[in-house]
Amino acid sequence: MRFVALESEQNVASFVADRVAEVVELGETVLGVATGSSPVPAYREIVRRQRSGEIDLRNCHLVLLDDYLGVPPDHPASYHRTIVETLAEPLGIPPTHILGPDTMAPDTSLSCQSFESAIDRLGGVGLQIVGIGRNGHIGFNEPGTAWSSRTHVVELTRSTRNDNARFFHDLDHVPTRAITQGIATILDARRVLLVATGEAKRPVLEQLSIGLLSIDVPASALHCHPRATVVFDQAAQPR
Ligand code: GLP
Image 1: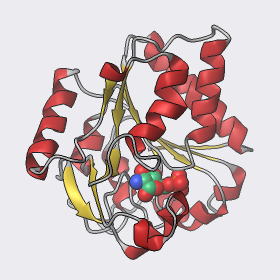
Image 2: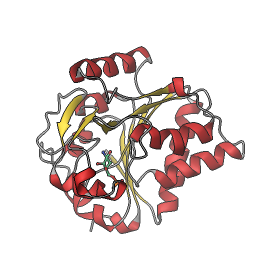
Image 3: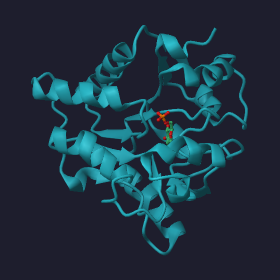
């Protein structure tokens, strides 16, 4: 796993946009996209570059990393809607090119399987962008998740629900379950780019940078990926 230390959040955003531009140039059209606050400046930079004619992602497909279960795709806190608003619409990517798990289907195991099959039909993910939770989660794969996991339903931990309460009225409104690409699903992407910014991510990056593989730090599975990069700003830099 490659660690890239950069000065500021904006440098991190430019680095992510550079990697996206590079893979698209190489012919990749399927981008895996995370939500959360970490990739937001990168998404803004990608949109800026498209508006100035430096890149053209209109033909790309966007694959969601995870989403809340039981939250409709047009709900303001739905990850689907977030991706539509921050990336797809400003980039002119049609709704048919956004692939997320069905968060409303009564048969959740069918939603998980259909999502996996749909990723396969697209030819897999060329570049998967992920954030990291303070407890080391990637997507919603909490500590203890099997590295062989495919897309599955998870009960969210209290700490993750607390971290995400800012997107809802209060903690009681934060869903208790989510659907997430599994760790094996994430590892299937041809490239993975983990984005971490801000002081709160320093302790988990310190754990990750030791290089230890641990089921208690889901992101450490990325050490097993041949083309995984972690990019972080100075505030998150391991000491
Ligand atoms: C949520 C998401 C993750 C995201 C994490 C970190 O739990 N499910 O995909 O990586 O939050 O979010 P942030 O970037 O806001 O710290």
